[in-house]
Length: 289
Image 1 (tube, rainbow, N blue to C red):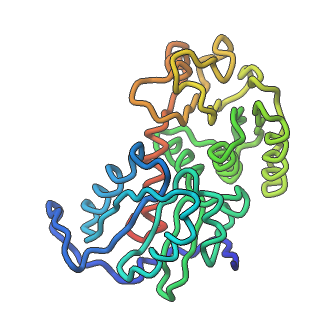
Image 2 (image 1 turned 90 degrees about the vertical axis):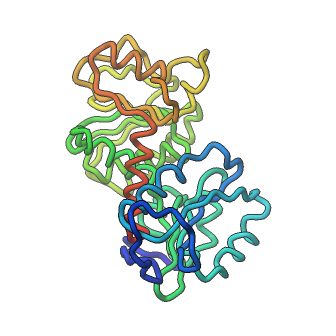
């Protein structure tokens, strides 16, 4: 596997023909994209990407495919043989394993150790990179909360947290504190960020996360908030006006963290806005954003 730094943004291998914006008919010239994972019923990407394709008059469709971890290598080999398949979105549990199945990995993917989108180039080679964190940053910028020059407290050093941490560092945060129930995991992520972005002051905090007092950005990248009885990922009483609080949990209603943040006059951003930002970044990577 070779490396790319950063990946070039080429259009799909075959330029898709224009279609009427209202057209939804799949034809013999329709290009194919898929989101692969296991489980797969919970994914929202088809509802996000197919409208993007329609708005951009791209004759293409994104479909979900359930692929078990044990079948990933065989399935990807088969998918690569489909001549009108131009790209894949990768979700749990395949983001790390997918790195070994592509020809090129972008700089962010190498830092994070996982990728969540791959595309077929004009030369037939497959390139992948990680866009989870970039989606978070894009969502923040779209609502006027540019992370540059700000301080951030991040709870959760797993795959999502790693991607967000690297993206925040790339976007220019001046200080980043990483917290995780597994301190060794938090320390590994802190080393990765410090090594890739030496201008950022990186520290490891306690878990549960230290008080958010004194931070500009507070980011929950843990599952806390998915269940009603989950403990809060940070001290809610320390949230204050002027902070921006992000929760990447995908729920329609505000999580307890976001509800508490809003009641205290904070700016907030939920997982769906992050998903929208990620979709726009991946669409640009695929060549139709």
